[in-house]
Length: 167
Picture 1: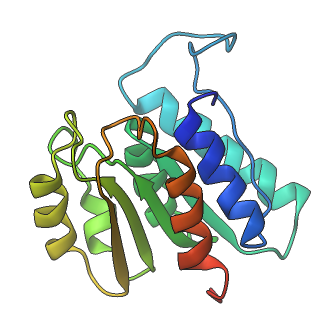
Picture 2: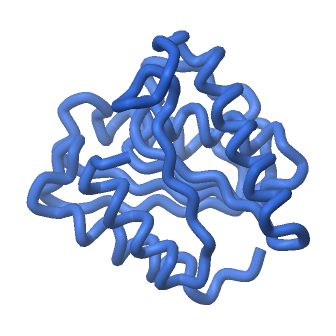
């Protein structure tokens, strides 16, 4: 939640007109619980979607995440009929299965650094090629996995992609 790329991405989404909920998965920061290899974290994400749906009834839900969280967000969002847009920042596409995401016809937006040492751009491009339309990939030049020195560009990219988007 305190990752600078997440913070700047959230700011970009707010500038685009989104209500944003940032949270830590179980066992991260001061959150209770322990890492559950995606199972419990998927439950956490679905609980967050339910919270936003209850808190803002009638408002379209968009699912977004960074790194491991992008896998959780893309998969949970693809499977939830209330979610209309999927957003992944530095998704670790070579490490996890993205079955629901690959089958989804929901709009998908990916943000990737061209120097990402954990999630290589070539893997993201291959994954992107397999996604159904509509989709868009933004590559941030000179950005590593944490987008060090480039975090504001994450927020700017999301704002530019989504400010006029109507899901």
